[in-house]
Image (cartoon, rainbow, N blue to C red):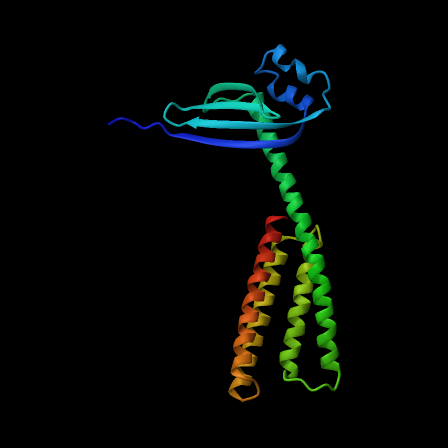
Length: 227
C-alpha cells in the first residue's frame, strides 16, 4: 500500500526584530553577502516571518524566512536536527508568548480595577440598606450573604492584583464563593416556601447567582493561568 505524504505547515511572524538579532539567528546558515545588508545598522528593526513545513513521511522539515515580506532564506533539515538557528527560533517563540501573556495580564488587571470600583459601590449601597430603616424585600440573613458575596468578589479582584498570589489562594476563594452562593440560594428557596419571596424573583436570583459563579470561576482560572 502506497504511503501518503503528510505535510504540516506553520507560519509565525515576529515584529521589531533588530538586524543584530537577524545576524545572530542566521549567521551560521547564510553566507556573508546575504547577511551584509543587516550589518550596516544592527539596531534597525524589521518584520521576520518564518514558515516551517514538516514532511512526516520523509522525516524532514523545510524552513523558509522572509524579512519585511522579502524572501531571504530556505533550507531543508532532518526532523531531529538541531542548530543555533533552531535555538534562536525557540527563544523568539518564548519571547512572543511572554509578551502576549504580559499584554493579556495588563488587560485583565484593568478589568479587575473596574470590578473593584463597581463592587465597592454595590457594597456601600447594600450596607446602607442594612443599616437603615428602609423597607426592603430581602431578610437580613439574605442581605448578609449578598454582602459576603460582594466582599469575596472584592477579595478575589484584589488577590489577582497581588503578584504574590498562588493557585491555592484562588482555589480557596472559589470554594468559599460557592459555599456562600449555595447557602444564599437555599435561604431564598425557604423564603419562597414561606411565602416571603415570589417564585419569579427566586428564579431570577438563581440565574444571577449561576452567571456570577461562572464569571468568578473564569476569573480564578484566568488568574491561575497568568501566575
